Image (cartoon, rainbow, N blue to C red; front, side, top):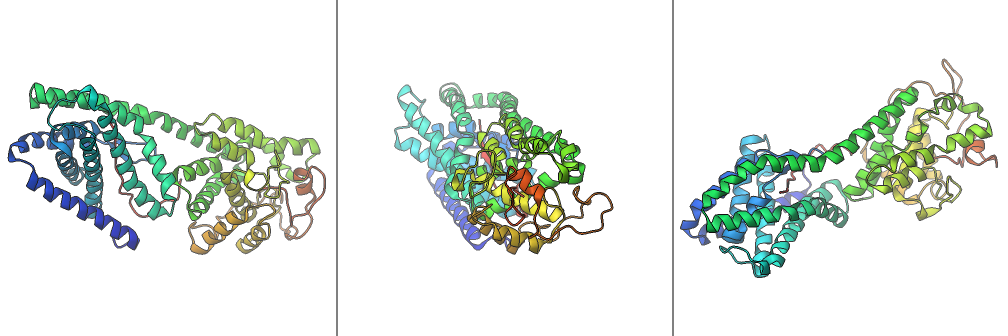
Amino acid sequence: MQKLPVQLIVTISVIILSATGVFLCAAYSLDWTTWPGLGLFFFLIAFTASFPVSDPKGVPVIPITTLVFTAIIVYGSLGGFLVASLGTIVSYILTRDWPLWRVLFNSAQIGLSFFLAGLAYQALGGRVGAPPTFFQVPAILVLVLVDRAANSFFVSFYRSRLKRASLLPTWAGLALELLWSNILSTPLAVLLAVLYLRVHPLILLVFLGALPFQRQALKLYFLRGQLYAQIVDALVIATDVNFPKAKGHSQRVAELSVAIAREMRLADPEVEAIRIGALLHDVGMIGLDDLLERFGDLSPKDARRLEEHVLVGAEIARELPRKDIALMVLSHHERYDGTGYPRRLKGREIPLGARIIAVAETYESMTAGYPPYQNSHSHGEALQFIQDQAGKMFDPEVVQAFVRVCENGAVAWIESPPSLPPSPLEGEGAEEKGPPLAQPASLLAKVHLGGRGGDLTEPEVSPLSIDQSLPTPEERRDL
């Protein structure tokens, strides 16, 4: 835990100590006659937790919600806490090579989430040890909602402190992510509770037969997200193949965009959307490689074709579930002063993600020598140019965040961009350097000012998530 921020160390310690207190209370309060039944739940939960399903981000999701809800209905909030926390501890120790603090923290936050949900269930009239009735439906719904809210709060608090993201948006996104799936798991929990209380406790073993179907349901739930991720990867590869001299451009723009978004403390869902928008920002360039090769000698008609890449890219991105990604792709060449394209949006009319991508793409293009910049420029030149364009091309707030990213070294390659092939504007084997930043760039003006003239001091162009070295101790549950 020495690598964690002090605030997180304190928070994790408080959560573990709180769970320890609840554990001691449960061990003292529960009657010894309940332990055989709790042991059955403990075994099933430990077994089930040993077979997680990974979501599209690789975060393991353990399908124990149904069993713990059943335990809460039968044995109350303390019983639910015991079987959930102890079952996951055993499962983590047997199946994962995690440090002890991570095992304890995950198990503690899972147990406390169910404990709080059980308290809410009992407070709203949920009867412990009796089959639920129709009149207890509100209490059961509250059981689901509180568990979802508590579990997502613990995880989002950890994420927001570690990644310096906004807590509330991150919490809201996580809380809604599996809410409906958890609600749909409650009828089976109620049925198991009724059979457990009225038939025989061993009837609970039928859950083992349902486990493969539950895991398959989770996999299908996540399959859509995985398919979209594969589509994005394929489009990025197609963009690189279309113009191999700029291979890796989209990935580096995405990495820098994520770093800026993190510096601005945006929530995880928004950061992820910005990452995808940055990966796809030039997908509309597919098929325009001939224009990029002769970028220095485009006719007005060709220049208009090149500008239309944002429209084509937005149409492609519109097929993704999040519509804000398409807006980022459409708007990443808008200017903060309202003189960009295609809609001449101004200031905060431009989506924040597009304003971030514009800065990231400009820096990457300038330092690599991609169009519209005729030569590669140093880190200092690109940084100074972006700062000079704050309030003109770029959002001043985004520029400030970008400067902080440069200062704190959040992106490893930012001060020493990777070795890249010559700029297509220079041509193969070109030895002479192009004009300095303050020199006119007639092509730039022609393409992005619609022939109105201009110079490179005010060009009309814009020029996964960051890997965390710390493990993310988060577990979510469903079904």
